[in-house]
Image (cartoon, rainbow, N blue to C red; front, side):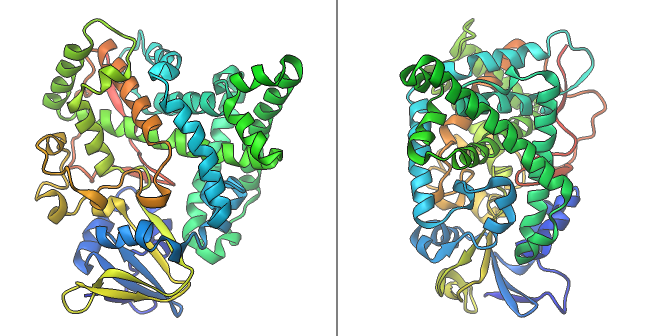
Length: 464
């Protein structure tokens, strides 16, 4: 059955427009949403000011939104909400412009995927060295964010952000975080996002763009000094974009889009993985044993190593199940369409969706549904991925989305996280949870939702 909630007369439903601002500002709102939506059903409609919106965590509907009825869907209000920060990039584009952007970026990620994991070696070793000599409680999460920023800027800009001074790195990171946070708040304001356009937000967006422009100019100057062939080899991402666009602002916007996707998502995945492993020492020990068995004394990790680590793969799958890279997503119908399930008395009939209706679909909610993942769906349990029962889970598990907008950086993200986690556990065999840490049920930990979901408490461990 499709439930209808009149937001003007009842408590706010948990459609994106009604809830996301509150979610950004609270500690446990995503889990509260899970509990509330379970009481309403997996697909329901909500009405506000005469407009209708839909929420679904049904994999059959999500497949329609992302694949079989993809042409009926557009980004809707996401473009104006994100444009001050993202500009004309892949995450604000629909139609031919989006297809063009995706093909350009696909080539670059295919280039990286063709290599082994040496792309990450220098940054991984820098990360590992950060903690040497550390005593007492250490929060790994800020270091993970610095690490993924370094790896992603190396991919995009041809050199790491770490080539900047400490002051410049701090300025860039602070304004990047600020712009990301405000963009996350603007999204649920929908058509009213223009109301939240503060001077500080505009300043942060401007500073991020300024740094991107600086790296672009450095690459172009290198070409003038050393020749195009040598410059293309050193700065392939920038010059592929330059060849296609011949427009510095378009190059910059694409770089900012991929930078956002590459930094925050993987850093959060790494943080949540360690966060749970130290709370489950038997899982941590099992992973250590697998790493030792596969790598022995080798510290330069390759794809041949990680392919043999089935438990590491299961651990990352489980982390991404409970904390998907994009926990909630939205679309807007560009024409009248249907969702295949959710209507009728039993919820098995199609749902009529009019043109210009907003649809929120939530991997975060879907991944915690007991009918899909078992009665222990809310628990952190990597072993669920080892017995083959989830081999055909399909659209019920979409940590990198699904269909035509599947994340191009999936291999990059998993390879980066795998390498770093293996080396971290190799280098710090005594990594453990600090004594006296309160352990709460999974999902009840304090979370921070911006465009991704991170741990509000960080990732605190003991290393010595």
